[in-house]
Amino acid sequence: MRKGGIRVSRKKVLVVEDSADWHKIWRDQLDGQVLIISALTVQEGERMFMEHPDFCAIVMDACVPGHTPTTLFLTSEIRETFQGPMIAVSSISEYREELVEAGCNHSCPKEDLSRRLMEILHLEPVHAH
Image (cartoon, rainbow, N blue to C red):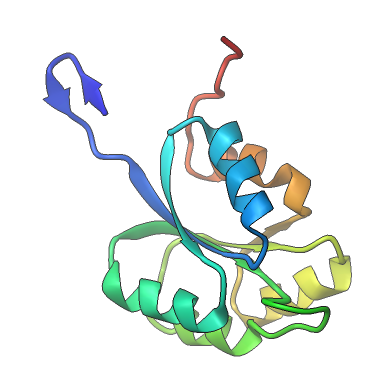
């Protein structure tokens, strides 16, 4: 991304979510304001976190994959060294609460993630073209 001839690097956000559809929705809604690094499995999320130490935020779904929480251990493991915002996303409020207990410091339903992420990272809203 360029601004006045100067290269501006986008903030990197790790998104651990097993639905590729949600990754696409969030990318479209955020319109390039952040660089989303996608992890579709817990193992991929752990690897991406190790390979990219410069994330500005981490988004964590509870059930990756399936219908029972599988990311609680990874959330607490990441929180040991990551000081930035971690956002719990799930359509089930109890799962979001479990992720907050494991180390997330924000939470929201999946459909509110783009707006919430922009608030947390102090980004300007994207205007429709």
